[in-house]
Image (cartoon, rainbow, N blue to C red; front, side, top):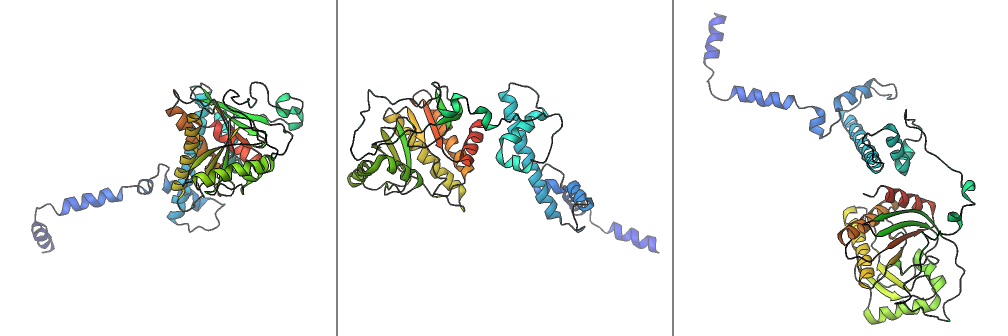
Length: 362
């Protein structure tokens, strides 16, 4: 009787397309791994098991969300280190990525070095380190060498203004710490020193729309240029009005190592909209470069724009500025007349950030 009832129940099921596709869809949904559903490459389920078994985790009840987050962090760090190591391998003209390339990539990145400081990679060698006292006798540490010195301005075009309002100052030595050539003609140099002592055709002054000298760079320029420099900026403000949003204006200079000053309305950093902050800072740098090309200014002295009173993170500001310069020079390599751009910095943190970003600029 039971067999007859089961046979009748099965025969009563319609032979339509209801049961088989439903089971197939359910089967396909269940076979998707946690990594696929999370959009990751590393195995989430395996890392979850390791987290529950490892002695470093005190609690055995670990949510799957924690394993997804840890997997994403591990995958990001792996991709970052692999990308940096690959760039070093290409620059060294090698075909094989070795543990030493990975170690050097980590050592050249300040943030990665902090996280991997206690880790030793096998077969990677060591990073050579020299005490500063051992390099004190070299000429490059006391004054710039003839090849790397901040060269004189175009005297055929620029006439220096002698003003009694400009105080006299002694030029402190500056030293070129790192340099690189982009677009086959423009040299980017990381320089330790003050913008008041650097020599070029123009110096960038990050300011507000009022063109005031209230910032860190502005105070340094005003101490050297004196009232004459402030009068020139005030005269330009009275004639042309305040600076436009992300605008740049060129004026003469007094008492500085550069005959011209580029006043730029430096944007403030917006932490809730990082992309827009990057776009605005990029626009300011591009305008500075365009004005240099339009006015036959070949050498530009550039401080770390945005990382002071505008509250940009130093690494983000350096990466944005270098990327903007690289993009501009690559797009105008046949027409640009810029031969050198000097990143004049005074604190060790900014120097390290700019040197690292310049080294991995692609």
